[in-house]
View 1 (cartoon, helix red, strand yellow):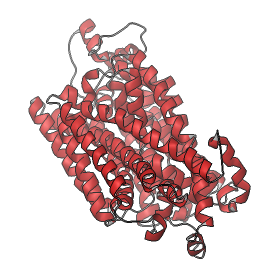
View 2 (cartoon, helix red, strand yellow):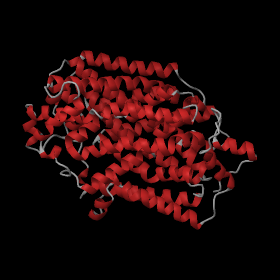
View 3 (spheres, helix red, strand yellow):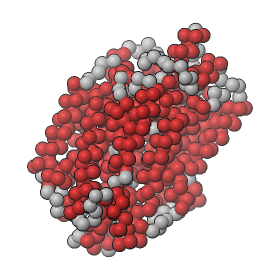
View 4 (cartoon, rainbow, N blue to C red):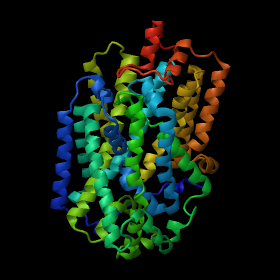
Length: 549
């Protein structure tokens, strides 16, 4: 096993995708983007409660749709089918990983996180472990996740915009990211959530319509393409259908593991549980979110199979066959390419493309909000300036959105990997550094500050080493084989659990107040909409303990 597990993004043939200005698709995309800006303006916020957690007022179905849109990024809408198209059986690890994690969330984290009742993931880490240092590490991890994850979204927006507007890729990345940053700086979490519900409707209609229409017009399927595509498997290349050809068994397991537990550690996913009224709504919205996600994930392999067959049979197939097959650029656009090669009307392909942009913008919104809250709420307000006014906090949050937007945009000009792979790196980081803290913090009251700091530090160092080894400076084949960046959590997550538990057991137990907060997260007693576990404990005992370090 070598770092070559990362497929190169590659160039695409302009002729294959008919890259040119298309009036009707352009009108559709411009209209959609204008709608997003309008919704952001209508639901603009001026206070921190609305900026970070939408006033904790979102209902279960609406939050479920927001979870779906927040989750089904360009990596899902474009990259998932692209990964299956390019790497076949290995791509299924992404489908399994990106869905199974929600069952862990539903059972172990959703309701408990809501009862803890903070604003952000670093907020939980800082308050649960009574440590500003832990809060800072959590905030740094959140920002890193937001950056890595968003680069994939920016690439997706640029590629789809390239198809619709016919200009160059860099220009489209700049334009799409500028629009995204624009509406986020106005709206905050409230406007982002309302937009996510709309974005989900757009992306799921576009994707499901593409699956059925491409399958029917190509003679691949009729009523249930999700199952009927199986008859294609024997006709497609061995590279597509034979298990473990592109990646060995260990990498397959490592990738699926990282994605499952990375799901449970992603700050922009967990913050969705803070936006609802209570723990019951948190659980219900998780179930709704999983249902909305299922609709696309069940369909992605079918569209990938249709796209691969159409591509191989087209005039462009032999060109890339001579160079080892479809390029990464073609794979990342297989959803749009399948519609294009089916000779469907341009406006229809434009609808499919618009869905991809909606998916990318929805996820970027969630990522940027969580990253900006990590800087404004967790670093600026809780560590640097505890007396900051709400106006100052919101200003710092908006400035962070702009700064992160610029960095992500520039990086997306020449990304180091495919959309889906870039996103998988963020999952690996979340699984190693944050998931163990969330799980132990909620389920073992004796997890203490020293254990958390040791575990997070070890996890962050391991992830950085894996990414450097795979993508920047290769220093060890053995390390790459057993700790691949994309699946580093298979080694990293158990290691962080062991380190955290061992150090916690070897040092003093956390204060009784912290233990009571953990117990409150599992209490059957109802809590107020704006109440946190800390509020309940303080009202019973009085007093407040500052961070230990």
